[in-house]
Image (cartoon, rainbow, N blue to C red; front, side, top):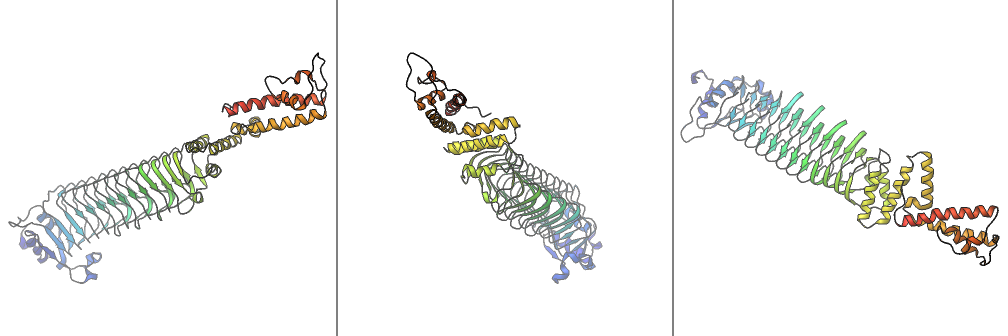
Length: 539
């Protein structure tokens, strides 16, 4: 390219390149220098994209001892900056510039690229390699930012970036690799889907104070995302549309403290099969209108929902199904509006609050070692009975086991008795009758010595009856003197005799009373023995 064919502004850029000096074409008027008005800038601020391309691919040799670079401020760049498959060894730093057309950097090998405070109708960098940072701070990109398959060896800085592509992908970052941190904070805003499936971040992923908007689908699609350190979606993070972290891996902790997620009637946060090496914080003002799912997630530390607001009245508001965690703090700011599904979760310590229990629960298969606070069995039974699936045996067995592990055998028996009673409600009428009798007599075997009370009552009853109506004697050579107490006791004992029953034979109604005492004594005596040895059938 002949320097004589260049405009004055282009010549300034051309001459500054060899030493890496910066060229400022701005007017000094902050209002007019805003790239939003870039299409109104005059020819004195216009630089053709082909001029920049020529410099970047070696059109000018750097001066000895200097670091060549394109550093330009306040320019309107016309034409397409097409660096597809090019090898660029010098930095590109554009500040406050306006692009008429989207730059093409696909499959290029770039040095550091800084596009700060610029306005672009798109940026295509699919498969590009950046040997340094990609700095887009404060820029506005409409039409889509394509970084799929790109590799950035430094930082990806999108602080304050505005991505505008409501009907498509605001950020296409499938399989993106960033060796250091990714910043999508300080007012980062997207209209359209932010895609990071299969992306790898070697440092931290930061979405603090970010606003993501895609109400018809996923606001953040980051399935299988791999982050070596922490993920921050907090401090004012807002998403309208699904935040999808399904199958993601986080090497540090995940913070959603105070985040606001809105996807009514659908999934607000999909963290199914998520793996986190330390903790997850959905706390301190975290609010989700739509389902929050950690189904199948593996959290090495704590999942905190302290002070959260969870709403999905038409379905599941919180799913911890099959989740594994060391500790879960399920103490939201108010009762969960919707179903809280804890089925088949494996939790070491579950901390909850009766004041904020969800009115609808799913608890079948839930496994835990410790419940906090340590409520009485009667209070915890109110928790079990909120299960929307009705009677399920496992939750009762697990709760009883937890009480027995604490040495609270009485509470454990109370739970198992409640289990038998609640199961009776699901049985046929004949089994209900049998169950009712078992309950009345011995509390389904969990109150075995209740039968002893019945035996004592029968002994008193028989003693009174036969004292008032002494039965006739049977003729015999030697007859003992009649004793109503021992006679009744002889009838009650299922084995052996006290030398009374063989010699006296009541008649009429008293014979029926004697037979009733014999049968009742047999049943209750065996029940006491069986209950005492915990051999009474619970069926």
